[in-house]
Length: 69
Image 1: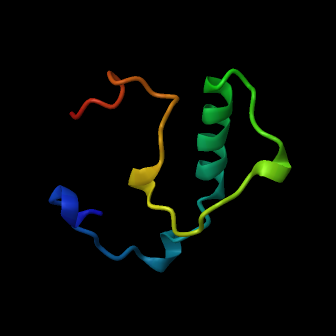
Image 2 (image 1 turned 90 degrees about the horizontal axis):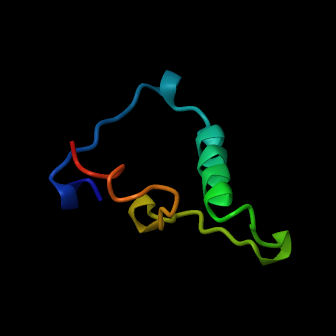
């Protein structure tokens, strides 16, 4: 994914490799709020463990907020 965009990836010091569950939860609440707090029944929820982050549809940001710096 990084190479496709002309970037590189470096290894992180193990001290900083911690669970990112809080970031995932925050992204989820932003999606929930942007969808008018509708959500979906838990029984219909699924997950893909190896989902690429560039394949996620981001609905809670407008085009202006995602403009390149």
